[in-house]
Image (cartoon, rainbow, N blue to C red; front, side, top):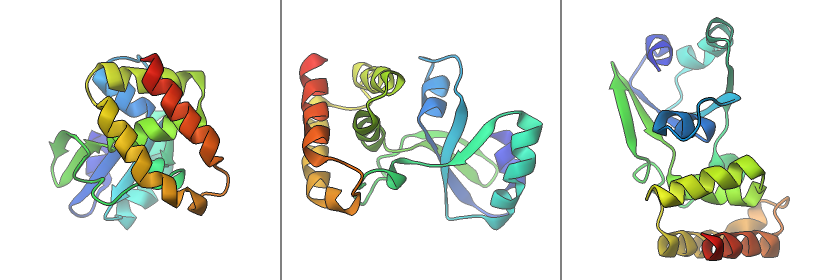
Length: 161
């Protein structure tokens, strides 16, 4: 986070996603990569990413649920604050969007992360279902998603945990 803040040229917010959230909140010791979104975009920071990737010896990915599922407006406000360093704010990307994106993918690690977010109180069962109901009509914008399978995954998760 400090390296990102040093590279930034203006006030911005970095939304951390996936394994990065898991590591910072303590249910995983490591992650394969650091997924994040920068808003508003900061060209100086984005241009620094290849050098940061090398110096930190970590894979950096501009990736978030926005790339994989519909995410309702206001996700920024649903993104819990992590830390402020200089002009850069760090937040965990909207946990509801993270859980739904993980359920859509369905990998074992994704399901473990989703379960941790639920058991740690980052998401609420009823609200997660409402969130899915809200995005379901917009799934057509993501043709790789099979909407009935996605719904089954969400329902199965909600019943299992």
